[in-house]
Length: 124
Image (cartoon, rainbow, N blue to C red; front, side, top):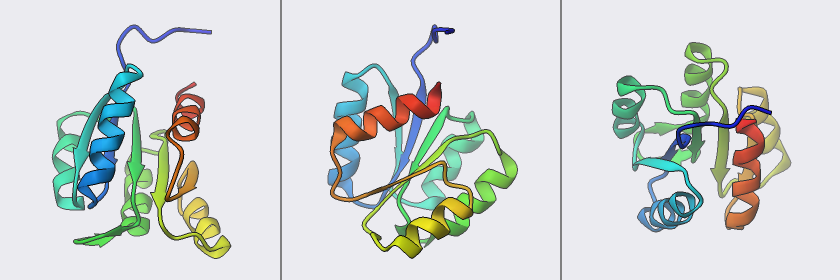
């Protein structure tokens, strides 16, 4: 298996500043570079500057629907892994998210160790 020489760059899009702080602290502790955005508009800047290796995406954002954003993101970058991290916990929400292009779906509250395992699996 090929090892990455540079740390993977992740983009977390979530309007909750506490979740972004927890993600940044924990993911950087495990060797990832994390960019954060509190809105879809904010997320466009790092996406235009250089595609991250993986996106962690909340569904309920102040300036748009994460599902629609995921769909458009995957149409532009089909190989870009997207993990939805959201409070929406119904099976129908999970199914729609996965059908619209998410590679994985996690419900808040979440365990950081499980998210780390899912990120590593998606980057392999």
